Image (cartoon, rainbow over all chains, first blue to last red; front, side, top):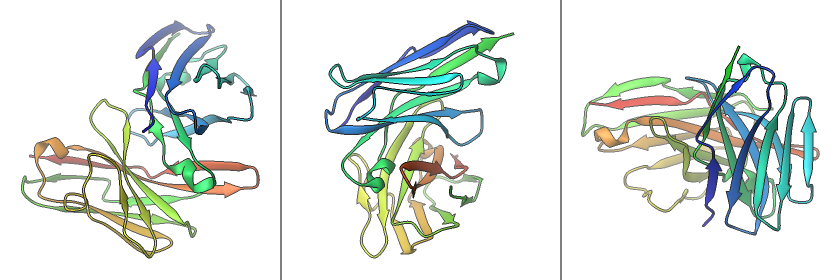
Length: 116
Length: 116
């Protein structure tokens, strides 16, 4: 089955700095890679995702890059703010059809702390 | 988008007992997914709940321990049977919603289970 490794496990930055979180996956058939933000006591919320036919996707301060050959993808947050402090999870899923997007293999999570 | 309601939001249970968690979605969905998030850990897929057929369990999870019902396209239950303290976790249901070119997995708010 799929295995997703996520690094670093903790990340501390100053407000305004950039933060980068990296993930690698094992199954070359995986084709959907979402990133979730989970605040303490709350449900995971999708912040950005990328599909295997795209190399990069950006949404305001957040971007995700995908390298299919190397089987890794990264989350980039620019101009970080204290409100960005949370646990971030990468995930991967494969197969055809939208329902497969629900069978997610998650990385171990990264605790991001943004200091004012 | 999808609105997912989970009940109960939290519970404290005695070891050896069982707890049934309910998940209600505001729209019809083909598949519903159940995840477990152990304290301070990532999310792990337990099973996929299919309407009209038996649930499909992931490696390490069995039907006798986690029986699932899926009576219709908007509702599912997960039972945690014969509980032990190791079952203390957050249990989340998830659904996939497709809208045009976008597909997203939404999560319920989770059920925080403590077994004493």
